[in-house]
Amino acid sequence: QVQLVESGGGLVQAGGSLRLSCAASGSIFDINDMNWYRQAPGKQRELVAIITSSGRTNYADSVKGRFTISRDNAENTMYLQMNSLKPEDTAVYYCNARRITDTPFRVFDYWGQGTQVTVSS
Image (tube, rainbow, N blue to C red; front, side, top):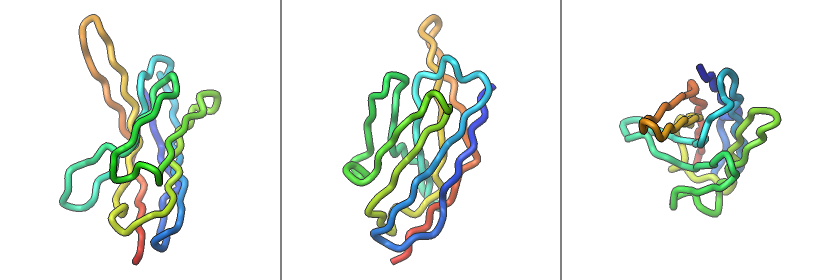
């Protein structure tokens, strides 16, 4: 199995920065993608950023230009650098690891416990 532990959340003022970390352990040798999701109270869980095993990245429009996802494979750690934070960024942020097989096609998702990010105005 894969275990994921997030850290780095906290309370910041609008315009501030935070860096989230996700430490992965277990059977991580064939993880395809790692992702950051977030969920605000009463809202759907939202995909924020993606990084593939080859290092390709993509971002939700709402965070593009402000957030940067990165991955340190040697340390089995993923990061989300969040700059220019806005109150609407307030949410619980979750680390996600995804394993995809082709024969047959299957998707396996692994989740961390989440870390709270609160941006005050």
